[in-house]
Amino acid sequence: MVPAEIAISEQSESAKAVPAGVTPFLFQPMPVNFADRQLLATISGIGPELAARIVKSRNSKGLFTDPHDLLSVPGIGYSRMKQFSPHFSFSVSQ
Image (cartoon, rainbow, N blue to C red; front, side, top):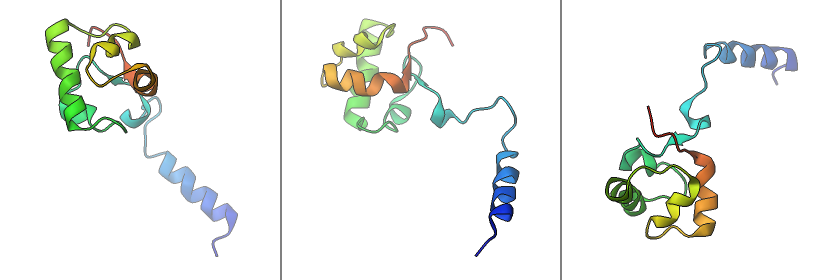
């Protein structure tokens, strides 16, 4: 059994491994307008086919500026749009 003091100390050391002000990408919204199919498919509920449809829709209809723009993608209805939108940022510039 590891004393609580040691466990806390070990956690503090691992937290110091990430520089201040740097957040792992996993905790930031993905830029939907610049993500490729492979990156889009890392979001739960988006497989390779839906990711390909998102990219195809973006390429043919233009950049997504709002979560509601996802509704133009075949296979994304209102509930899926609500599910995915917190995982995306809708910036039109990199």
